[in-house]
Amino acid sequence: MEPDHSRHATGITLRELAERCGAELAGNGELMIYRVATLEDADAKSISFLSNTRYRAQLASTRAGAVIVAQRDAEATPLPKLVTSNPYAVYARIAAIFHPPAVAVPGVHPTAIVAATAKVAADFLKPDCEGARGLTDAEIAKLKAISSRAPPAAPPAPKP
Figure 1 (cartoon, one colour):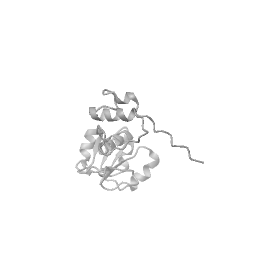
Figure 2 (cartoon, one colour; figure 1 turned 90 degrees about the horizontal axis):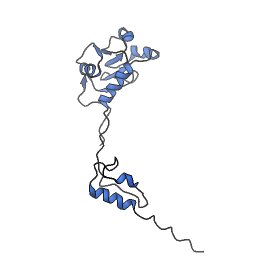
Figure 3 (spheres, rainbow, N blue to C red; figure 1 turned 120 degrees about the vertical axis):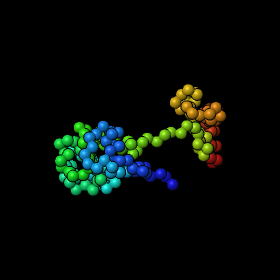
Figure 4 (cartoon, helix red, strand yellow; figure 1 turned 90 degrees about the vertical axis):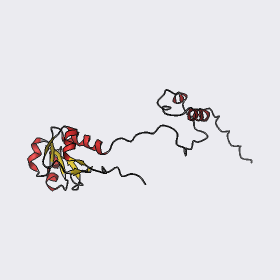
């Protein structure tokens, strides 16, 4: 089963998010936040943001637990909030906290299947190159063997 990357399993307090993003906290700093969402789609465990005044009406109706706003919009909502000069940038930082990039695992997966006609660039196989970093000598040898294969012979012509 694939892990659910749409939320942080244990949540993060609004206070910690404010500290990590350099935003001013206004309201309940102990509020646990589990995910990021749009103003329209947020729920009580979500944090959302307003950076474009065109969406200010959604601020009044959002179900978000907390919001990220500019100082000019801080009084427009009673919700707990992070106040900043750049709400979009703070939202992006928080989204990165909840959705960190996946860590690449070096090597060749044991179930990998490589077509007999596959070609691997020679510079890909140098031990110090990016593509080979983390591969064992045996894995590099296997890839070199694949890259040196002659293309398969053309099928015989059909008989008349």
